[in-house]
Image (cartoon, each protein chain N blue to C red):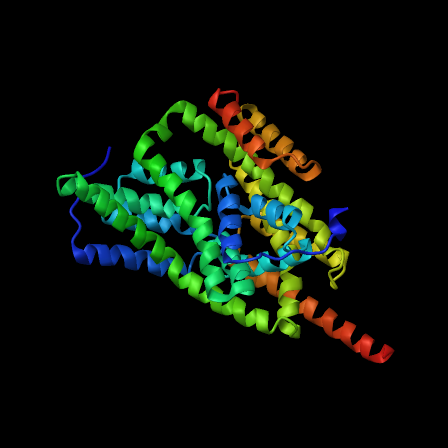
Length: 198
Length: 200
């Protein structure tokens, strides 16, 4: 099972640049699903658990999530140079592509077939993002909050954002800080127990 | 379709400044600041037509890469309009490039500096209880946000009689990604073909 193979690391800044270029060029309708597939399942630079934790940080900080994420990964292995190499990889080739499209087809995106293709791609992209979320749920197995609490947090987040359509920032502050507080208590508890056992 | 507008140096500074000021507000992605860009560029200054604004976002969505690149296309089109105002030709290309650089740099610089420094700090203190609790507590929230995003994108099409094929396509794509290792590009390509042929 790939789950148990040892983790790999990016070899160099060039490796980071190339890897992020390759995954950015596959990311239609958002890069997240591709990032998870490439970095966790194929390259094995991180586990699902690590991916979720890093994604949480990338998500809560302002700025484009994927940009934040690649700055984090690049910076972790190769400092500022690594962060910039990853960012350049993520942006340069797709920027060239989108500007060429803008020059060539400025108005074509209004044509009915192009609108239809966009609708189709959008529907698929929605499925990719949801599936990525579902796959990552297995990363919660070892979460010290316990599965029932994790499920409750997930349901309330979904209810606030997906059903009630509350602004993200309030959901992060409300549900997010409650969950972090609970995690803090559980971690303290775990440490005390370990202390007793020792 | 494109407008002919005149932008002075101080206009370009205001343009840059607008994106700089939106950067730290973009929690959850740059797209959430799009309404404010529309207000500033289209309603207030008329540097961009409403149709150009909408097609910029649509074009960026149809291309590969991070969603934030819609900002670059908006910058490109503002530059194009400014170039047209100066007679077009090389002015257009040069000013479009300027628009791309200023808009992208503006939207990304403040948030990237904050992110880089915060995450370096968090990495150094990754064993601290507070940092661990934050990451573990946010994990289920973030996972639910991903599912919610998929849901919101689907639920935006809310006429069951007309939109059920779209929902079906989303559900099938979701199952395939979840259960198989099929390459994501095949799915996106299939979506584009099905949509382009007008089946959904």
